[in-house]
Image 1 (cartoon, rainbow, N blue to C red):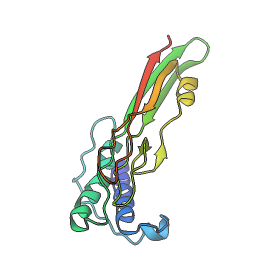
Image 2 (image 1 turned 180 degrees about the vertical axis):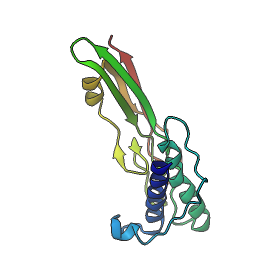
Image 3 (image 1 turned 135 degrees about the vertical axis):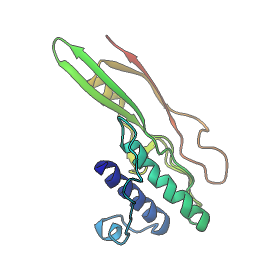
Length: 169
């Protein structure tokens, strides 16, 4: 519960800054200006991946503020990460557990396209294929942006990513 609460507050704070403070650097001073209160018992962490619920907090805040401030908003983004939990065993390296994470496209701004293949709301990029292949017994057969997945319009959403994995053992 604690990590989900902390992550939900962090994602909600990020969304407030993204919506209300465009151009302002995100740092402790800016984030401390917001007082986010989540009632006890309101968050119910899904089994296995409690951060998945916290990721939705950003889209909830952006969605609510987008209705109130339609000229300042951002379109919905790929809040839930595409994650593949990998495990491999070999006589030489032993057991390896690895989580490969991919991001989707970020929603468009009023005057700009969204970023492609980006983990929302952190802005991090996806894990490079070389890291995944070097850590686990897996081959990344294909990793590419999905053409036109950002939708139509003056400002388009960022492109999603297609990843094809194959087991080596």
